[in-house]
Image 1 (cartoon, one colour):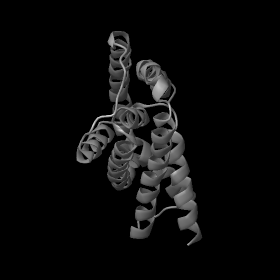
Image 2: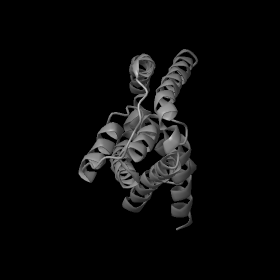
Image 3: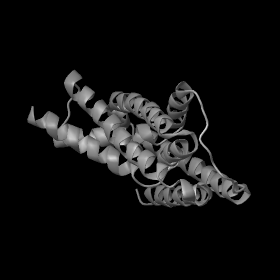
Image 4: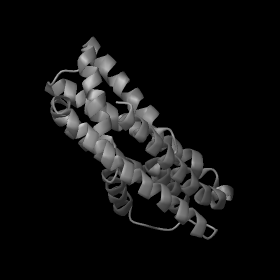
Length: 209
């Protein structure tokens, strides 16, 4: 039972910390809250967290395979370089072209917000490799085994940690309605810079493996 508690809080903390820096998911949670209302922000966050749980489960299933085949990790890193470069340029161009406008709350389907969260989370190519590596580390530490209760704890903790951060983003930015124009414009610059940082880190990992 003790290792289950350790596993939960270790995974929760890892999911929480990796979601805290401004990124595609938490920025969209904030934007959804500002533009469409707090409830839709929460529904969006639930959609994201649901997909994260699915991805965490897939990561558990393939972690052994990744350990036995290190060339797969090298391939993923090379693919990630292209992805980060593309999104760095994309978000920078969007920020440059974006026209400042006043946001207002509109009535939208909560179902749409939920599935938007699922879709954006599914497009995050780093989630499965990240949780595969995390699962491997926890396995070496003896905190997780490939049993149903351990896998369930790992998956739920990953979803809960992610949702906690998105929930905070939703409520924090919902109170900044007078600053939404600046936030909406600057968030794309932040996302572009984040992609550049990840690109540099990935290059360093490839050349110094």
